[in-house]
Image (cartoon, rainbow over all chains, first blue to last red; front, side, top):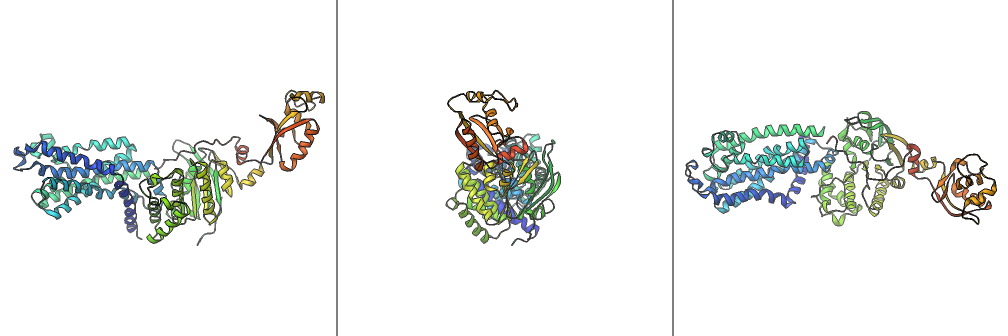
Length: 259
Length: 354
């Protein structure tokens, strides 16, 4: 086996375990789905008439506007608790034990991180299906469905560092959870709830630099208008930039821990 | 199957100094022969876990070298990991994997093929008496079952060397005895084993050879029997009563007393009395006070006791109780360190490095 084949092989087997851990604790996915689901159900009713404001550009259903943001939010929630799981395994000595196997230490990290693609995508799928069931549109059909899940999954992996980095650096469960919560405003300061035109000036600036916005805009196009390759391109680019920065810091923090 | 015939473990001058200056290992040189069941015995914080972590490639020594089945633990770490099974002090299991999944993952990470892993897992579940719970999550297992599963996971790839850190720590006596039997069987089938323990009876019962470690130094090593013989004497505890009087002094007085001039106490002191009565048979220094009477250090006590009793009884002392004990490893530890091992919790698992 070449080093690369071995890496994929090890990541696959370790990733299966991480996935089992996720699936077998219903509290994991219930707590992830709960928040976006409630926002979807409550806000779509509460702010039903908000779409009459000029910034919405003639959109007739707030549910349709709201849905892509909540799909992305499900992905964000899936990542928010991942560092916590890593810490539990660090503390129990499980990660240490893995180091005594003839495997690459990068496989250990990848085995924790790669499953986030599937976790984020699965959680997004639930919210997406519920949205459509409630009346949100998905004009691009199955193709768009798959593309939205791939984008959310990619977001999950790209954004994993937001939870892994505090976990690896602080080694504190509390700090990791708190920092994850502090990232929720990223969602509020994106176009998840209202269009950019309705934001105060300073928030428009935040919004322009917010990768979550580009993800949501691409998905919103897929749901409401059709394949907007420009928006999809921007989403992919922002995920690549975000992912590169966060992964680099994560690798550094991981190496620091292993030293 | 074994390509290498040299020592299973060979360390030379291992030193580990942690950040902060703690000297956990201080010039440790060890050699473990293939097939041995070797015990590293010592109190908490003696350096046992550190030694194991160095051997298992998890920790780098500050100085010295260590080889496992002929391979250097630093420069050939990956090769060492392939030939080594490790069970840590606290079973480190994924609570959300079943027993079978745990073994299969361990096998896959050791690079075994799917079919081989399945066969070997069946075998080990059977051997460890876990077949009936193979499909249950490891998190639901009892302490003894977790430990057995952890040991099984370390054995999946048929390692040449099995390293166990405090394998029975925290187990109830029944599970402990059961695990001892498993370990003996595994060793008998040819697996070299290194275990750490701070339980004397564990080292005594299981190990073909032990090294006593204290403050990071190996103070003595050898077969438990030989070490105990090295103490040179058994202990005889005598419960005594003077003939016809409760007070020993009544008997002692007419004999003219204190002629040995040791000044070790009043003439009525049973120790003084027994010392005098046994003069020529037992050295005076070998007689010391004991809560129920006196304690004697006597080589080969089983043969010597009848003559001792005759001498004491003929001189009017009545022995109402007698207890002969062979030296224990605890006595060995006492001899070499001047202290007794405290049987409390074992070393805290080290999170240093990770």
